[in-house]
Length: 103
Image 1 (spheres, rainbow, N blue to C red):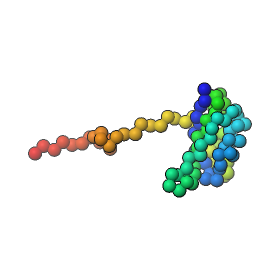
Image 2: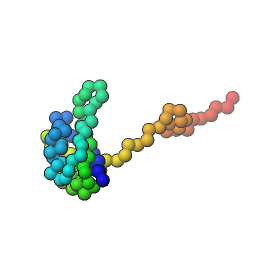
Image 3: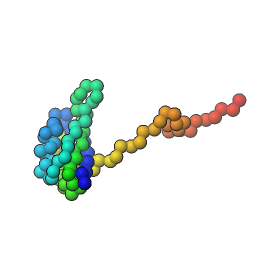
Image 4: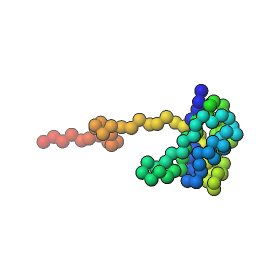
């Protein structure tokens, strides 16, 4: 089963092909996605790498977490599923409870 790995604290100069090569030394790489700003198209400094097996992902995490690439120390760990975003229609969406006024 494929496992997605988060790669943070990347240099803006690091490319998808460089990441693929770096991770391929630890197992089969299924996909690489350098996250880019939707307005400017410039890299945002993090990426997701999908490894073919959980064992390959763990080997890459162990080997590459803290490794310096393009002058930056990478932060590499297993990717977490995205957090659910709240809805504005929910009264508690801003973290507090709305006071009810009594006239």
